Length: 70
Image 1 (cartoon, helix red, strand yellow):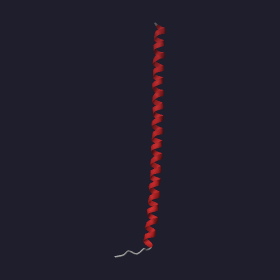
Image 2: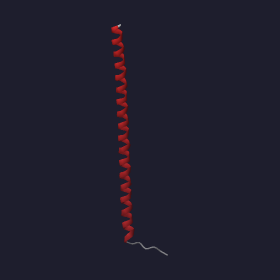
Image 3: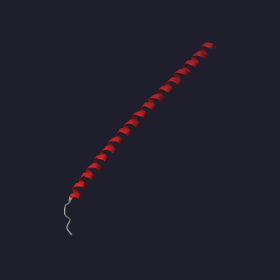
Image 4: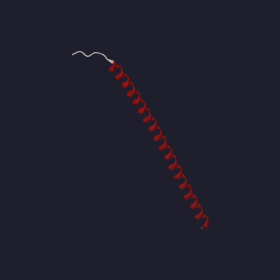
C-alpha cells in the first residue's frame, strides 16, 4: 500500500519545527539557569569567605584587647 503525500505532511513538518524550537528554548533557559546558579554559588562562597575573614579579624582584635588589659 503506497502512501500519498497530503496536506497533513506539511503541517507535521511545521509542528516538528515548533517542537524543535521549543526544545532549543528549553535548552537555552536551562543553560541560563545553570549559569545563574553558578553565579549564586560563587557569590555565596565570597560571602562565606568575607564572614570567615571578619571573624578571624574580630578574634585577633579581642585577643589584642585582652593582652592590653593584662
